Image (tube, rainbow, N blue to C red; front, side):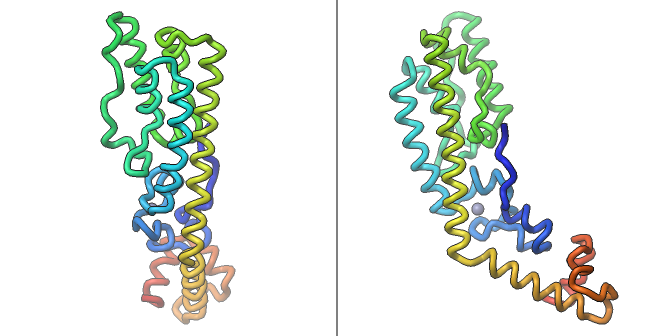
Length: 223
Ligand SMILES: [Zn+2]
């Protein structure tokens, strides 16, 4: 399970407006990938949507986790900081509480799995392996209760991603950047196509050109 295809600016830039500016996040000025839009973008509205979703997760953890150590684990897995889901700066995973070597090993496996998955998959609803066992064996939950708690958290994570995407679409459409970029690109295509040194002859032919070739011509015609 991963986040599905989203019309981010870097995705649209491949077919709509090639070039260096079209694919960037208008707020952060970096390439807007799916993970940037959902987890990393620092636009206040996107951060606010993440913080709001976080509150629902915190309630679920507070009410559902069997003990304080399990709560620490769940907060660590669904890491949020300064309104983003970037894991840089996340503290070390909870652990060391179990005197048993087997428990410490199980904690290490869970921590490694969370790192392997990364924020993008966690917030797409992927459940780290070892979490169920942690809740049952160490937390004393029944198999059924642990499964239900994990399913609820996974659902809340997916809903959080959805909310962040909706917030992103709202602010990006409000500032009109997509439309402006698209119009600027269409104008550029026309001017490139009309230019005598380029022999493609039609708008359709210009649009079907490979990006680097088009970009080189575009830069000559439209500064
Ligand atoms: Zn951004």
